[in-house]
Image (cartoon, rainbow, N blue to C red; front, side, top):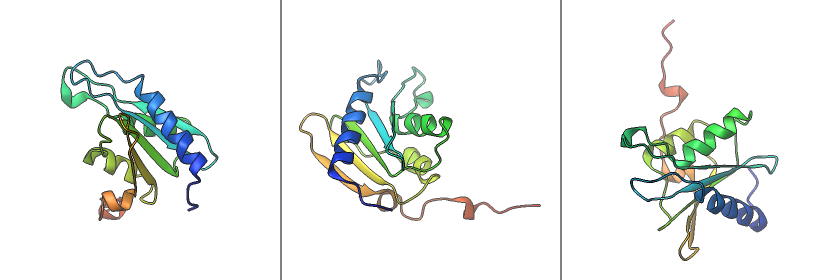
Length: 138
C-alpha cells in the first residue's frame, strides 16, 4: 500500500480533531474523534458515544469504521484518533479494525500538544484473530 503523504496525514488529523468535537461523553468527559482515509481520498469520521451503561459505549474508531462500511467501503488506508493524551485504540477497536486489514496506518494525536504517534495496525495487534481462525462445520 502507498505511503501516506504529509498533506493526507494533515487532512486526516484535522478530520479526527473535528470529529472529536461531536463526541458524546457526559460520563467520562473523555472525548475522542477518529477519521478513516479511504483509498479514493475520502475521509469518514466518527466520535465516541457513551452510555450510562458503560458496556454499551461505542468508541470513535468503531463509529468511523461502521460509517465507512455503511457507505460501501471495506478497506481504508489509515485511521487518525484524536484525544487528550493521544490514547491508542482499545483492544476491541484494534480487533474491529483488523477485520478490514492489518496494513492500515494508525495515527494517534494528543490534542493538547499535537504530538503524534504513527504505527501499523499489525504492530498494535500481532497475531490478530481472523477468518482463518473460524473453522467451518458443514
